[in-house]
Length: 450
Image 1 (cartoon, rainbow, N blue to C red):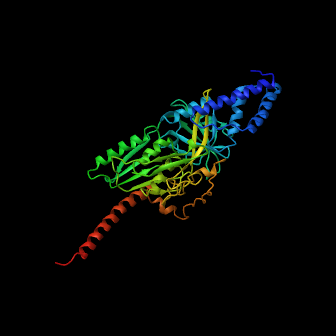
Image 2: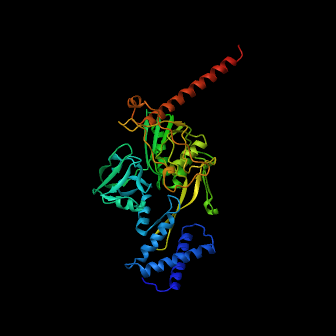
Image 3: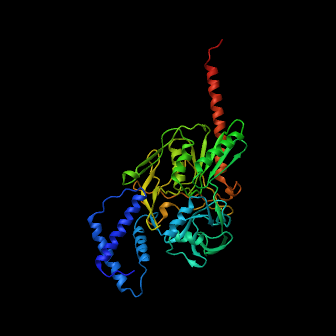
């Protein structure tokens, strides 16, 4: 493609803008009038394109130049806004379906290096021992420096049974090491449940997918029917849950709430100001709930934990969450590419900001990494380059677990947080019984003598 005049370049730019705006309308995002000053700046862009096309030492690929320019523009925004070329956009669309070929890790970019947010439970990455905070410095001997997030995802996905070698740098080790992982079809089971000690329910939400809300209801009904007298308490586990679909997070929180806000969003446009409310449920879950969270609990997980905490419906136990409180809108473009743009922020029912702060647990309990005697140091939103600022103030630094407790913790169950949650639920029942008995005694003492 060769264009020889400034007029032709200006036509190209105008067409480019019109196509982009059509895509924005298709994505149900409001369009504001573009200021005149912006068109003046675009003249510089047109001039540069013309000079490159005419004078660069080799013939240029105009599509690659345009895509590169858009990508660079979005990199001046926050860490979660990005441009997705058609092949990368197709990769993104696969993620919410719950089945794809790959490793099973949630990743991000930190300091220009590919970093694991959390391995997804029961996947090749999880079984290979990859941990939150691990830095992937090479994929099959190719450096990951300056590799985009979606390019990295594309490299790691592949056919079931094929090998991939990752070079990992872990903070507490002096030298990087290699991990060979066998790709598999990642079928993420969104909800897992079981009965603990014959009386208490445990529900693990690994990711918020298309049928998470419906599956949660089904699993709760199953456990409640299994126990004759009903559940005495529930542990809702969203640890290492990287998030997912907003509507499914709302359904999960709504299952345990009757009225009031669940979450609301606020942005510059009217269409970005949304509010989601709870509804009365046919199945009443009147038992106490403990919600487990950690630094790998992000986005939709934080919405659920924040709503349950604000409504005093659950005790939040664990460590501070990731702190991703921004809303990304996926806008399809005319050429099959996509624009992932941060358009708003989430707020808990009482107006608390999640972004770069996260949800603080009611009860702080650390889990130690098995056989290492140290707390897991999670990567959090505030650690990311270009993270959206929390204008109410950044959170205080996370407190590490006290020194000198390794021997004590090693003698306890591997999942300390789950064990503590079960202990608290059992204590809850004991205190309720004591309170009821105390009331009965008080009423008896207060009754007049015959």
